[in-house]
Structure formats: structure tokens, C-alpha cells
Amino acid sequence: MGNASQYLVQLLPELIVTVGACVALFVGLTRGSAGRDRTAAVSLAALLLALLAALLIKPDPAASPPGLLLTSLVYYVRLITLAIGVLILLVNWHVPTQREQGEFFAMVLFSVVGILFTASANDLVVLFFAIELGSVPTYVLIGLSREDRRASEASVKYFFLGAMAAALMVYGFSFLYGAAGTTALQSGHAGALVSLFAADPVPSFAMIGLLLAVCGLLFKVAAVPFHVYAPDVYEGAASPITGLLGFLPKLAGFVALVKVLSACGWAMPVWLQWMLWIVAALTMTVGNVLALRQDNVKRTLAYSSIAHTGYMLIAILVGPMAGEGPMRDGVAAMLFYIAIYGMMNLGAFAVLAALSVRGEAAEEFSDLAGLSRRHPGAAVALAVCAFSLMGFPPTAGFLGKVYVFSSAFSLGDGDPFRMPLIVLAVIGVINSAIAAVYYLRIAGTCYLRDPLVETQPAAGQPLRVGVALCSLAMLVLFVWPKPVVEQAKLASDDLQIPAAAAAPAPEVAAAGQPD
Image (cartoon, rainbow, N blue to C red; front, side, top):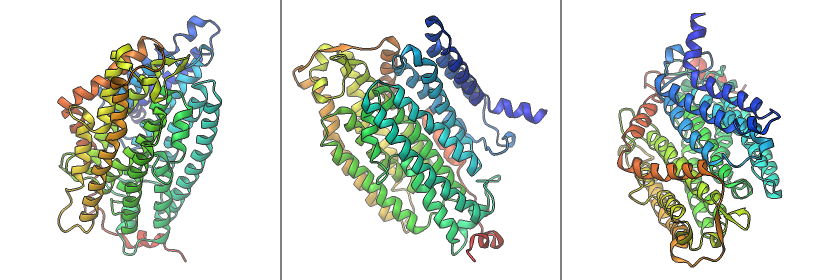
């Protein structure tokens, strides 16, 4: 009984969001319109209460329930997911019809729960179900977000491609299980997978499993060549939902990626390092080059999202370094960057949702022409988010790129992958310069062009509050990034594998050898 109560306390943020999702679903089923209108408020209250609980309850690894491991990574992911979840809820407040409010906000909360459990999963089976719990509701949200053929098409396309990626991932997990003889990721600081990847040679089943698992997770983060769905899905969904898609699935993918690589002791085979190097270089280059060719702002930001995945993959290749800050620790840099990216990307899409052109949300560059003269507040917010995405001071996006690119220079002179990472960082800087063209185009369209169409303010006060908070956060976190940086560093420290723990165990290492 004591253990059960301890588990409940440790999982209180997840339980609050889960209960909130169920309550929102039932409130949305009430017959009266007054009851249904409270669904968004119930969901917001659940997220705020869960955020308070996450702040007060420090994860205790010793009190972790079976299948989970509660560490500083869980604490960090809880805080950024719930905080940005509040912003997501504000900018989506107006999206669902009254009839669909219960289902819509319940799906948002269930997706948040999936991300929270992704961070705490310590078992391949739990990790798979957590990732899918974060992903499956987004398929529904795209279809619910607007009554449009494009939304239905995007939802179906995203579902089938997501199912393929899930199949790849779970197939890879099955190989890792077969090689290690257990689904546990870590036991204390190490586990069977650490011994497998410390062996020489690494068992064939383990190599195949890691390759398939990484490919499945690369789909979640929209990396090349698994990126083709992103532009169509982003364009088809309502703008606030597109902002959600740019953060929650990407966060789940990167957190799962660092957990799998951590379970393997960060002993990435040379072929995997080069594969991720090529994927990172192609992802940032393809994303930025194709973004230059777009006339639709949502598609431009979709390709921008792909490019940002490439930047974060640089940090994944660097890996964690105990006791170092984000300028030398790749995982800490990635964790900081993805939090910043979630807010600036959401803010840009929220501004589009806040503008109406001929009864539809703004999407084209022509819709933004002369925006500063008609809606100066929206123009300022969009410019701040665009400059942050570009990595221009004084915005937090500048710090994020500095941390990611500088981490690539932190490997020691004796590391054989030091020079390739430096080259990759240079490619990243060049791509940031290319990206400046279309980000400046977004800001320039708002301030330098004459209005071409009549734009009207759309939605209500919650959306405007969400836009203001997203853009303000970019300025505040540039001046005062310390709280986020320190938590990202602590989260990365928990991903270290002591050298002694990584020593190969012959009987385990041989378990994955084919007959």
C-alpha cells in the first residue's frame, strides 16, 4: 500500500492531465451549450494544476513505478510540455465547433500525457505505447480542426504514414528485445543494451533493431527522407493545430531517441553516426532550400520545421557530457532548443490563426502584406517569432542555435568524429543564413509591402493572450535563460552511463548472435 501511494504521488502530474482529459470528454457530451463551453476551461485548469504539481514534486528514481524511471529528464520534460501545453490550449481555444469541444480538448490532453510518459518510460513496450499515445490523438485533431477536404486528406495521409513509422519502430524494438533478452532500457545506470553495444563486434540483431528504431523515430521528428508528409499535413490542418504538430510529436521523437541511445550507452556504431550525419545535413538543407520556393506561409514554416530538426540532430550526434553546460553538452543544447522552438513555432502559427481573410485564416504571403498598418500588434509578434526562428538576437532562438552549433566543437582532439561534426556545424551555419531569406521575407511582407487584401482579427481573447505570451517568452528567455538552461543540464546529466557500467558482459553480448 505504501508503494502504491508513493507511485501515485510521483505520477501526480500525469494523473491530473489524464483525469482532466476524461472530465473534458464527459463535459463535452452534455446537452446544454453552457456545459460544453466549459470544456476548454476544464482542460486549462487541468494543465495548470498539473504544472503546479510538476513544479512541486521532484522525481525520485527510487520511487519509480515498474516500467518507468523518474529522473531529472522527466522533471524537465514535464515542465516544458505542460507550460507549452497551456499555450497550445490558449491558441486552440476557438478551433473546435461547440459539438466537438469535448473530443477536441480531450485529444490535446491525451497527447500531452503521451509525451509525459515518453520521458519516464524505462521499458521498450511502455516507450512504444507512450509515443503512440502522444501521436494518435494528433491524427484525430487534424480532422477535427477544420471542415475542409484538405484537413481530411492530411489526417488520412498522416495516419497511414504514422502507422508505417510505428511498425518500423516496434519491429526495431523487437530485435533489441531479442538481442538483449529484456525490454528494460536501464536498471539503475545501465542495462543489457549497454553491454550489447559495448561488445566487439556488436550483435547483428542489436544493429538491425537500432537501425529500425531510429528510422521510426526520425519520422516523428520529420527528418529526411521521412519528411514528405509534413508540408501537406501542416497546410491541411488549422494553423493552431499545426503549431501543436510542430512541437509535441517532435519532442516525443527526440526524447525517445535520447532514451534509446542512452540505453545503448551512447556507443553509436560508426555507420549510425555517419547515417545521422547525412540525415542531419540533408534535413537542414532540403528544408531550407524548399522553404525558399513557397508562397504559402504555412508550407514555408513546415519546411522550416524540417530544417530545425536537422539542427537538433547535430546535438544528438554530440551526445551528453557530464557536468557541462549546453555549449559543450549536445543533449542539454537540444533540450533547450526544442523548448524554445516549441514556443516560437507555435507563436508564428498562432498569428496566422488570429487573422481572417475572406472568412478563412491567413495562409498566403499576400495575406500578410501591410499587416503592420492594420494590426501592428500581430505584426510585431510575428516578426519576433520569425527572428527567433532565424536565430537573430535579441531573441531566445539565437541562444538556441549558439548552443547547438557550439556543442559540435566540444569533442576532444582524439575523437575520430570531431572533424565531421565541425563540418556539420558549418553546414548548419550556412543553412541558417539561407533560412534568413524566407524569415526576413515574412517580416518584410508585414512591414514593407502595401496591403493587398482586407484582413480582420479572428478568434478571441485566449488566442491573443497565447500569441503575446509566445512572443514575449522569446525576449525574456534571451535575457534570462538560466532556469531553462540549468534544468536542461540536469536532465542531460541523468543520461550519462558510467564507463564501468558499460563494460561488456560476454553472456549478454552473445545472446543476440544469430545461430
